[in-house]
Amino acid sequence: MPRAALIAATGAFVLAPIAALGATGDVARLGVLPDGSAAPSAVQGAAFSPDGRYVLLTSTAALAGTSTGGVRQLFMRDRTAGRTTMVSASASGQPATSPVDDPAAARAYGVSLDGRYVVFATAASNLVTGDTNGSMDVFRKDTATGRITLVSRDARGDVVAGGVTGQPSVSADGSKVAFTSGTAPLMGTDTNGVADVYVADMRAGGALTIVSRTATGVQSPQAVGRPSISADGRAVAFEGSAAASVLATGDSDASGDVYVARPEARTIVVASLPTGGTDNGDASLPSISGDGSLVAFSSTASLVPTDGGADADAYVRDLDAGTTRRASAETISDAPAISVNGARVAFAGASPGGDAADANLADDVYVRTLATNALYRASRTVTGDAPAQASTRAAISGTGGVASFTTAPIAGVSDAWATDLGAPAAGTPSITATATLSGRRITVAGRASDDAGIIAVLVGRRSARIADDGAYSVTYTAPIGTESVTVQATSGVGATATATASVTRATPSRGRAQAAPRPRGLKVSVARPWARVQFALPARAAWRVELRRRVPGPARAAAFRMLASKSGAVATGRRTVRVRIPARTTAGRYQVRVLMSSALGLGTTARTITIP
Image (cartoon, rainbow, N blue to C red; front, top):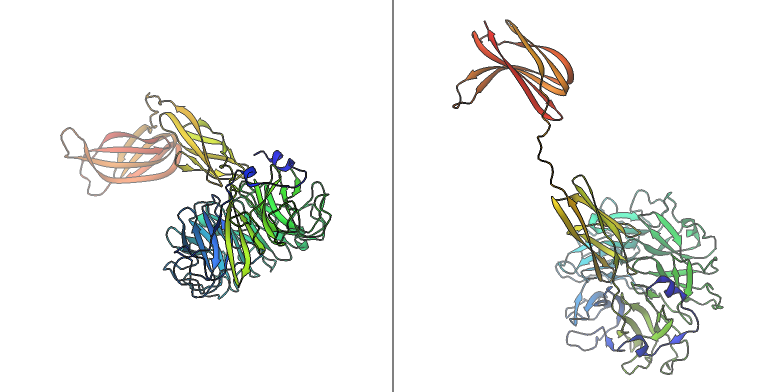
């Protein structure tokens, strides 16, 4: 949807009935055992894959049918297949020996679009060999192969002494992992001695980039963290204290803020601002949209005129338009979550009123549709009523079609649930493509964009590099004739669009190729033991003079045996060379040949001489 329409939606809060969202309102328990029964111990979550099929949960219960060792493990549930697998396990299937990090305020794990890659943090030392620090590390699990990789190594590839803070977030294709370091630097350019936000490029062997560092090398004197990486992997939102104001121009307040960095462009901007002003309260817990243009966050500041309190609210900043709006109606209790396509925001908070079915007098999870401003309570029972206990840990799928919530413990057991909101299908990315020919090389270039971010552009079978503004190009040798290539763009929620570009390379002329130059003016005089050879090089070339004798060879073919030679470096013009005649050379007819090797190839000339 157009960003202008998204942000322009204002007015009174509307509590929308299910039908207004086109949803079924179905509610499903996520933490179930393989036989379908409820887990006997607490289940918490959640985090969705962008397409909403996969959801991550934590629990000590055997949700995958195997023992957790009484340790909180990370599980991935396939909502389509109804199957749950344990993710926090070694390649051989051994569960982590320390709990997976799962703070109440914000998510500390994530999953790629296709469910293949999952990132999480734990102090377990049994997941990979060589993990000897006994502290928190960030891992990436390949659910297709079972391979697990320790992501939070330093630039030398060593395990970090003292570990890291963790808090990983992953791009939609699983190739970029953002996380928070510890006090130990992971790179030589990290000199502030506090936690920073890094991105590891897994396609480049885990190569690290410090995200929370300006183009001139400035870092925050106090810790920053809680990164949220965009689906396209080209933008990272994070939080910082008031001291982090050195990272962005225009941040002059004395409050904590939310920032957005674009590592490729080496820019950092402050996001927690009111429209056309400066904030007056702390902001934290960011969640970024797929293309990095929208950021949801929690703030105690009054960023809109209608917010007269000092309690935390959920806000959404449009970085392109420079506008900010409030998404929540009342105080929120933890991190808001924005859908990958930027269409909806989920948050947990107090009832905004106007909901006859909300009689629990406790926090619930709500979903705001930004284009229409409609508000829907996602935390509900199968009858549509609000749960008896509070609901927290709001999460939402990539298109905003599914939201999740975790209910407060009853008899010590909490549960995680998913509610079907009935969101529309993912939109189609926009893509252009043109082909130009330069000599034998063809360049296919254009621009691709989508609210959910563009995670891949394929030019034929070639993967294109994508710039922050969506521009891409691929250059390769063009075949003879007409080359028609299909370009496909894939968005952060898996939607695709194609364009075609064509160019014709004419058949080359079959005229005679330019001949390589040959030595000129060859003259030879003999006075034993020397043969004096004179010649001219018409172009810059390396040269060699050979004294040869004809020997029997195949019929009608000349065969020669070289008796002596002399070579020279690249030169041009007239040359005089003396070649020593071997002492055992008998009288008779011989050949002197001169070769020159120039940029156009090898040229030769020869003369028959008589040696007395």
